[in-house]
Image (cartoon, rainbow, N blue to C red; front, side):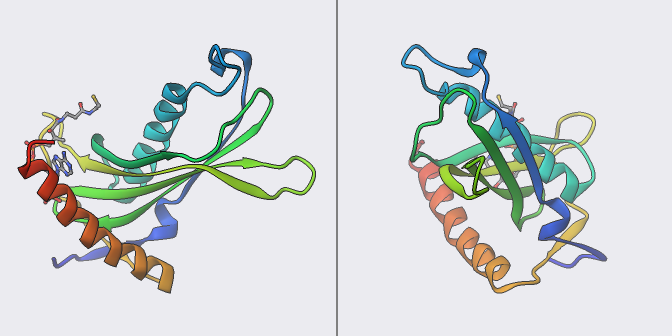
Length: 161
Ligand SMILES: CC(C)(COP(=O)(O)OP(=O)(O)OC[C@H]1O[C@@H](n2cnc3c(N)ncnc32)[C@H](O)[C@@H]1OP(=O)(O)O)[C@@H](O)C(=O)NCCC(=O)NCCS
């Protein structure tokens, strides 16, 4: 696709930090997964908005993996970035970490790819004006991966999922 203007992956990168509170905890004493999904959706949407410069809606989320639990008072970090741009859709990778207070080291607790769609004032899909400028090998690898993930999503949708 041809674009007049481009934005880099870093332009959309969004980092969100939160200290986990009592109201975020479930009956088993861990972070409630649904709450985490809500936060991931919000941060993903902001990253997509930063890329397209307009309104977005979430069309899909895949590969949501809960790798580790999180607990009260943990420092939670969510990082989202646009990895691929289609006509109206953008793929956003969202990683969730717990940051160790002493060392600052981050361990992954969750990761997912969101499909965010740029929409007009009527909520209809609208063309994304900005291409994605791939500046690093990692940006290029994510783009290549997105092409495969898009094919998998199309196949699953065709199968009725
Ligand atoms: C997302 C939405 C705007 C797409 O509208 P649509 O009429 O189906 O439009 P299209 O089929 O042309 O799809 C638009 C783009 O989204 C992509 N898309 C739509 N549904 C998708 C899905 N389930 N998974 C992945 N991509 C999807 C299409 O591939 C297309 O990408 P492209 O423009 O880059 O080629 C519409 O389905 C919608 O409003 N859904 C509800 C969204 C919502 O309310 N989200 C909040 C959570 S409840």
